[in-house]
Length: 318
Image (cartoon, rainbow, N blue to C red; front, side):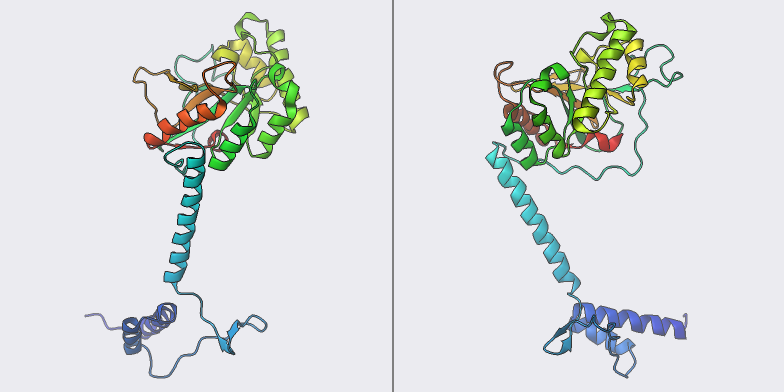
């Protein structure tokens, strides 16, 4: 049998003193007394000016059990707040919380079949519909900018639903301030061209004017030049990607599902969500569809939450 050495005794003594002071549990205190020396041990004094007192006596830190209880209460309050917000907006269950963003970003490559000639060799922005991840998360993206519903801003803020916007200037220019409020809530505003044309029908110069012109509008109006570009209708060619790269675009996210106020559309044959899928919607109201922006968010969140998915912020994975 191994003999306990002098260093082991010192370690055991210090460990037991800390355990006894932190928990004040009688049974542990008895165990500590057996291993500790007979001489009483007093806590080291705090530096001058930092000695907490109560009735003239130094105070120990709160026991770990109390700290855990306080943390549990904080989580319960946060859940109750989310649940109340969900009920206000017509949802049975609150949105699930997304995991922390990855410290190491996933490597993004162009989806097979979506490449142009020498896509990777020429360093053109990758075109993708899904972020590589095993986490049960999806990403909401919203295009165009026609509908400017204040209730949508309140709903997504109260429910803390992240999303990414892709804007076309001809639709947003009558109210740049609405999208400034969106930006101030942490939403990243990205490029969807000036006038939403079918890009492959245009020359390289005209495509560049559409894409790079919108880069400049967003820089001027909102302070940053976007790194993301979504071609109108999801249609592009080599010139589109060359033009986008020339004015600072790094990524071209498309989508794997599309959600409307009254239904979903799917790219894949299984008609289901997958980890990392990008979901498309539009800034549309009753004049353009069969419901409001909050109606669309309700349909989106009901399905996503029911399938056990959380909504994550796309830019955190790029």
